[in-house]
Image (cartoon, rainbow, N blue to C red):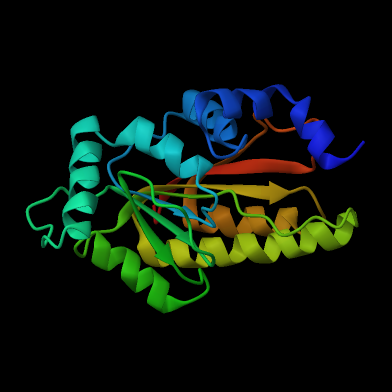
Length: 221
């Protein structure tokens, strides 16, 4: 069965289409948040495109009046206004590729391995740091288990590295991880950085998938 046919028969794919989420993966973050209560004020979504996780963050941590102000700011800028005195979005979305704008989200097109990207994130928060960093990024899957696990671990390590630059003390980190031989080493590194590290497998994640999600609390404890 092709991927498109499989997706159309997938309950979360259909729910995403019905509810307006850009990707079925939005339900993974919803379920993780329901279990672990991730509510914060400032969040960063790494490897964010197409924006499903950013949509969930907007719904759950950005007051609707702030979203309305962001929409007004966008319209003002299009009309030539300065946009001053408009509420700053509490969410930053980062991706190598351009992402369709979302109300309540500040989009940065940048490389998560670059220190310049970390500086742009902190600059947007006016010198403050994020309380939550999430990353649902993954390389193109080849179905070669060991290779896919390795490339995912490298992406995860990059997400961990930039998080050490942008995450506030006691902050939270949530990211996709593939089961593989490097998992133990990654867990060890996370346990050095965070007070509590657990692994979650939301029901929105396909049973056949080798993905899970690390939920890490207490950064820099």
